Image (cartoon, rainbow, N blue to C red; front, side):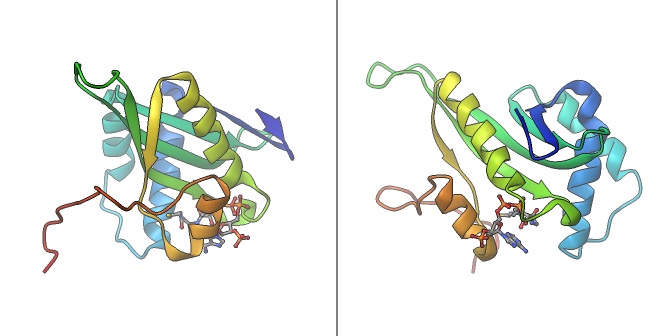
Length: 155
Ligand SMILES: CC(C)(COP(=O)(O)OP(=O)(O)OC[C@H]1O[C@@H](n2cnc3c(N)ncnc32)[C@H](O)[C@@H]1OP(=O)(O)O)[C@@H](O)C(=O)NCCC(=O)NCCS
């Protein structure tokens, strides 16, 4: 997918360090202290995670501008339900200088197309309040009904 001077494509193994660097930028923006060796540790873990889908956005000169990454959860066979998968979107990030041009929305759109092509019937994520309008435009709604969760240190 290409528009507005950038390309969005499925990440390949050669993108491991770019994804690590984008994640590092996100962590740093959130005020985290980056430990030595983070880039290598991330790249190794990302390369070893076969149940993950990642799209990257890059400038015409190849500079990484953003990414979206999601864990793919495949349901076990069941006689009651078709064998489908769902995605947990763990990171959506666009570099500061590239924000506000629709890149975040297009990364989500690329993931949406991939989901439809790969038997994915649900995506979930934890939204920052500032990003809710972006996710709503991409078709996300707030979970309700049967959804429950457990969190360590919730009290
Ligand atoms: C969220 C983010 C990926 C959006 O990228 P983008 O290329 O600017 O996205 P788009 O141009 O397609 O859409 C803009 C939307 O981003 C969201 N947004 C704007 N500023 C934001 C900020 N500081 N933090 C998070 N989201 C923001 C809003 O929903 C905005 O939509 P609006 O114009 O209707 O308010 C980018 O702001 C970012 O990387 N922020 C830091 C990381 C983050 O907050 N990720 C989301 C966690 S749930």
